Length: 422
Image (cartoon, rainbow, N blue to C red; front, top):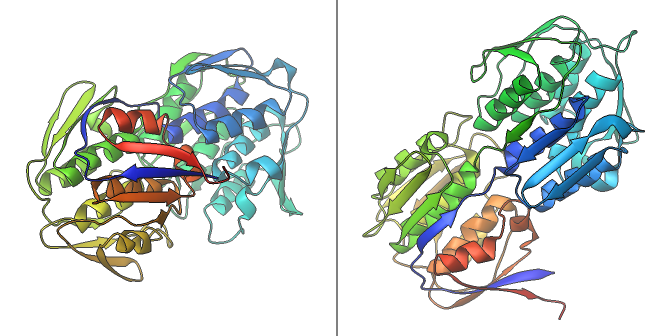
């Protein structure tokens, strides 16, 4: 199992080119299933989750290939509508193939992601919507078995999500694009990745209005064609590298990105004392002194993104003053707290609230990554720490950050990937 060995006391500074967004690329790859003619997708990051979804789609007999940052897909050779557990278990986004398969072919059998339990989990919102569109849904032996109504076409409907769900919104707008009639979706997620998917569907011939709002209207069409499209830049990767500048009194310029995607995070960075300058496709963060304390409350877009909570908490650990974090999206998103405390942070957690008392500096310690975003918060923290630290279970970071060592080295981080089995 790979680990990162990082020698700290780095000043993170330099330029870094941002990759395409993982959270946008995955639904765009799933949407390719809807097209009757070949589709080409550019700016696709080379990440484990992307490779997994390409393997899953290819396992249906679809001709899908990735060369560099471009994926081409031709669905003419599809011979099954099955997504097996051994692939789906590694990534919740795999459930996104359910809507396209059901809409275009009238049937699908997809494993529940990661052994997910139906109930309070957002996946039940996907299934409720499909049932409202006339589908018959059964769950057997951990698999969702879905059948379109007689005639093989989903039916347009009026449906409002019980909670804001990014994956649910994405899955249902893909399905509704080929439904018979008009679908009006309420309480839709507003994330840029949802907007990106809707825009690609329109490029494929879908009829969607209300893109970027809480209510979308999708007028079903008979068929969708392929298109050529580019994945939106990764706003979370952007924010993560900029965070390194704030932690180390550094100066980071992120290229091939957009400040419009990251407004709530950039506002907090400025509150913490950073100098933020932006252009059409770049963002720069400069930090001259110790960060200031800040209060963070995660919310669905356009609020502060939960995927940046861990990285900003790492900055707050070194801030002058006490910061308060309230996590409103995920019930178990503070797993990085014990690891940051091992580095000398002072964080107390009570339910959804974390109180962070700033300290002067981090000191090196062995730490363990617990999830994708926590991984990056620990990388930046140990880069700022005094001494040499080992980060275990870094396979998490490989799921969401392309060429992470190369990019970090270019920013001045002394980082080495080692294999603990050697």
